[in-house]
Image 1 (cartoon, chains in turn orange, green):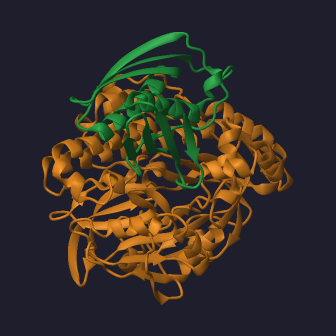
Image 2 (cartoon, rainbow over the protein chains, first blue to last red):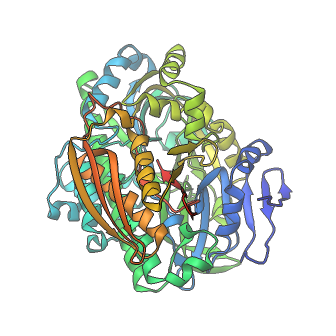
Image 3 (cartoon, each protein chain N blue to C red):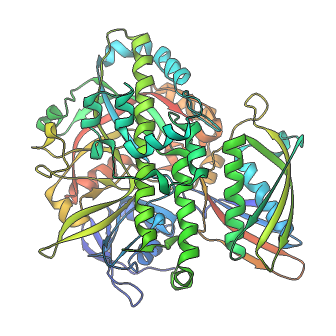
Length: 475
Length: 139
């Protein structure tokens, strides 16, 4: 489908409102990124998103946007919390898929001679790949309920987390949840998988601070040149996927008339104020709490792996942030404060200095925004801006964003070849599946440098540091 | 017969499955699903597993069918190479008998992990002696 675009300025484009749309669509991209955004069905999906009930301002595609199911990935919509609704498709299957950044007290020169050793240790300590399960064994019913209800407090009470870890996690790693609304089927999947990385685009990387863009903010985040950091990218595993599927189906059964009124079945939603909307909200938050415990356990074992190889190492959390979630937030819209469900699907929250959700240590700067790059390429730490709060409900991109399908990537390159290429760049790679490595090849993704640059140029976030990998673990 | 569409799904996998009947097209869809994770020819039909699904229409039946297979893999680590499906078209219910074995990393080369079934781009076209199914898996 041909979608007409209006250029607003160098980095902003509009899909003018047509009769099926309640608001226009807005794309934040350079000409180069727009080209790859336009080659799949992203723009068509952005139009569909603009038809959601109670939507404010415009449906948003961020610089890394690409085709998803129902809603595009790298997409944001804000729906009124009383007249709008909540859509599982606007959150994504992997609820609270997110990124955790941890700084070490080690330098590049200290780590590089032992990079193979530390990667091997992490690979041994942290389960990943097809069918991977956590090291805690199957959690009891009571225990999985605690994980879902308490969020990262669960990990803290069991000494898997420090106070600093919790303080430096979005929403302190705990959202208002109720495990009663999560099915036994979802809990059964989660009970076996807590503390596992999974596969696909999920990874762990040992990176070094390559370049500092904003000295002051980098200092506040305690990041310095040549420092070694650890990045963890994973989500709520099978539990979150099942919560999404369960509620998508439940919404179809409860609101059958909606199915035919929607341009895409994946856009199904629960109208705000209905029992089902409230239940999904609490179930989604439960899955988000699971994801925070998942990344926390991975960090717990990563700390042990580091201690074996570098006995004096200290790993301190910089921040943990999700990029698949719907949050109830208050935003000023045309001068009036409204409570909205901000759906961020493949989009990262980016709140500026002074916002009450920003942790104490960062309150004068804004919270860190973590942009994982594609395998073996750079990642970025950005920070939120006031402009972003106005333009994108305080959101920016979540990574590089795909440009080639997995199938196409796999046909172009072999996993083993990519390992060789990375080796040439002095990057150590260890993976559970060569197929996954090929599917996740850097050529399959947009240029992360361009995505970070456009985030800054549009004013929705600001670059703080650039990170480059020296060791990669894939599922 | 099934195949994957290269350019249709940027982050996911788009599948086209065909059969002489709806049942056969469902069986091919299930094979296409398994083959995303492990090559079908590496799986031996050692164990039998039977399950029932009930839905509201043919598309939700396909959705729940694949969703159940994802669940069975994650809970029991069972991979199937052979599926027999019986569909009650009036009630949108099915009975599936699947044969396969437990996933073993030494025997089965892991490919991708399927996260979830989706409705995105789902089509089920029934003709006289041919049914074509199209769907997308989130991976």
